[in-house]
Image (cartoon, rainbow, N blue to C red; front, side, top):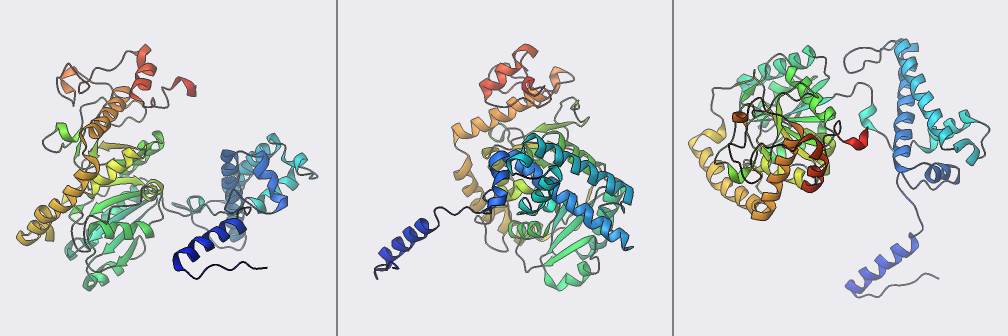
Amino acid sequence: MLMSCPRNRKLRLVCWTWLMCTVFAGTSAGPDGNPFPSCKVFQTYLNAYARQTVGYLVQGIQARDASLGSLRLGRLYASANATPSEASLRSSKDAMYSQLRDLLLAAGIPSQAGLSGIDAAVALAMSCMSSQLLPASYIGRPVVSIMLNYFKRRHVVKEIAENMHAACLSVSISCELVVNVDNPEEAGAWANEAGFVVPVFSANLHESRGYNRAARLARGKYLVVWQDDQIPPRTGIWLLQMVRLFETYPRLGILGMNTYRICRQKEITNRWGQPGWDPDPRTGITWSFVHFADFAPMAIVASIFWELGGLEEGFSRPGDCGITGDWELCARAWVAGWQVGHFSWEGRKGDPEPGSTHTSVGAVACWNRQMDVGGGSFTKRYIHPVFVQDMCERVWAHNMLTFTLPSPDRCPYGEQTRGWANCTAPPAGQRTAFAAQMQVQLPFELDPTTG
């Protein structure tokens, strides 16, 4: 007999909520809740990390099979930078298959599932562990998506597109340039650049909404916020350095490349250029952990960008500038447990033509009125004296554990000898205790627990 719910609107909502929870309480769903009995063995005998690894391997093997099939038909299956050979595809597939076999054997999957052997277990995994696509493993997917919010600078369209494409090709990094064209009357100029350029046409959304829209189209592992008054160089060493930093420091979520602050409330203005540390011995790059970094350029790991919710749209109306959105994103990253860094590089140049936010009318609207709204909202959210002190101390602790100085006078914190804002690093034997005291993790190469 079906249960009926009362007519009262509020009681009816409560009733239906209870019914739904009761009826579906025993139903498993999602990639870790496969309902088929034949697939339960993977949920039971593989931990979460192993299941994720199996998923990557399964999709990687299937992708290479598809590429080999295309090659047999004479259809070139281009990857990010070249067309892979049949031999390289087979070698890659065989390595993945071997890794998958070893993982399933170690977990005892063939015997636990009552299968005839490991090949039968692999075949079953191909079906059971294909519940979720992993776009990052697709062949031909870009590594970097440069995101540009464009508004009424027709004279820079071709130069930005051609220079950025040349920069990516110069270091063999696959890229795309996703452009939010914020004035539709110039859509044709960007449509003519389509290919490397991925245009989307809006109507004066301005920064926060424009970059979020571009990010939804972006397919790269890393997102780079770029502004239309910046002309990129035709060489892409900075792209290599950016990717190297993200790959070396897996907790690094944001990497500023413009101005920055190492502690917002201790500095009266933004910093430019190198921070003063020796080059990082793990990467050879001079960089720093920072409190906040400014647009632009600014790079963000794409998965982290969406984990954090993208750029804050609630501080501005469509058409208003996104001032303070960069600092707000950095603060959110620190609060979520990710890290923010900065490195400086030379080569880009500015467009001498003033943009709309630098006219007399635009300056008042953005730097005065919107700064009051966005800056006030940002301050209420994050600039509590105790809280912001905690953030600065965390940045300082990461810097002390990661970098060295060429000489004491290069300390970016100044010459203070008391309190946390100095460059007195803990002795080698006390690093682990210092990290525990500051509640931060050692750089993973120096963490004794990682071997």
